Image (tube, rainbow, N blue to C red):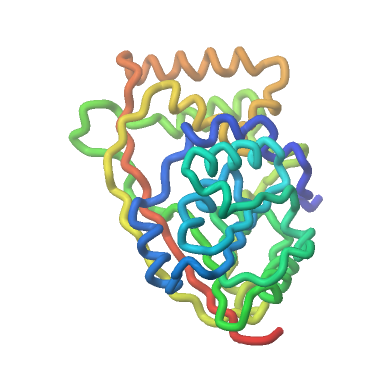
Length: 279
């Protein structure tokens, strides 16, 4: 059976995002400012914007930024983030699935997918957003760089026990990855390059923005990191939520009696796809 999106995918996860998720590499905004020749006059669309993690820091590079996401909790968090950053006047938010675009939003100079494209009907959405880009516009795909070493050798604190956390989640939720009301036995799909090329985008330019800083993470940080993911969204545990959190905290205390962990911040992989012209 093919997995289908439903509105519970990230239900209850928004409140955990800002503290739990590791940041994108600090050089990301300057890199995109240069690569996109952003001068404060264009329009940005962030599809699957979540709590505004990318929308808000990129907003000063554009005249207007629009963030769309189907989860109301994520959009409330995004509004708070924009207000705190002083960019609320530059940004507007819309509760939409990517499949509901273009939704009368107009044309854009840049469309961003920050670890969100895989949750969409990708071929359909790729064609739609290409039609929403001005000639010469860009689609930017962001993700944490896969395969790099994330442990911090010589750090004062132990590493986050990711494998043990994953095993505990499976004890509670089963061996197959949960996603909303459905299951993802094969995980989230790949092959974005082929899909975007078939939609008419030109071959991408790849950039890697170095992360590398060693971050100190508390047990509380690791708990909210766990609950910020679709595969461990709080509602999935039902009546066993408190039991799971207690076991998780016990596991973390065994690994680090001080309650502190060290983790190397990820690098950010950036693919910049140019719009080849009129659709």
